[in-house]
Image 1 (cartoon, rainbow, N blue to C red):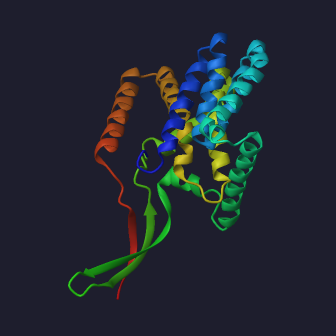
Image 2 (image 1 turned 180 degrees about the horizontal axis):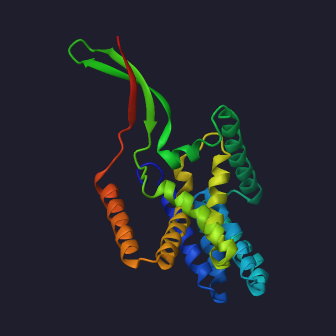
Length: 275
């Protein structure tokens, strides 16, 4: 992803760091949590789901002290976000210019949403679950450098595939997040904010007209933690630990093999017409 969306990599780092600080259950890290969330949102607005995570976590744990300190966390996040525009302010712009810029950025994204209104809103879910970006037209070109021309020698249609898709982690982590949310509602309420936050991020991204799969990067660690939680719970509750351990080990090996040696082609051709 670093070759296509570098800012999402930084946003993911701050999302994971925020998660670590939040689950440490230490009051003294709450100011640092606010700063970390602000840095994440400064990298990418898709990290705004981090603002919801603390209040969910404190609510399910009935942590009144954390709830009282939550406004401080939000204030520090907003202050950190504003401070990330230090260069903007240093160039002579004022607070009014800063607010006007935020509104223009918001308007830009709203216009993109309207322009892409013909795109199915759940397209990002299709990519995440299947790796299919959508239908595509394919043309084979013959480049003649001597004659200095380009000739189309064939065309076809097919489906475009997302090269980074991993069928062993992406769709399974989605299902695991739903299952982890179900388990956490019934028994382990401390786990509830993690799958819920990822599902909220996925839902908000799916509502966009022209979504990109890397919008989900800041929430992927939460989905993978949910997957780990479900796998561990399955292992603990299994009657045959040897078989369960063997299956989990094989699953991990397959993940490593796919990640290191398998890469999807850019498209899958379904039909071909010669010109």
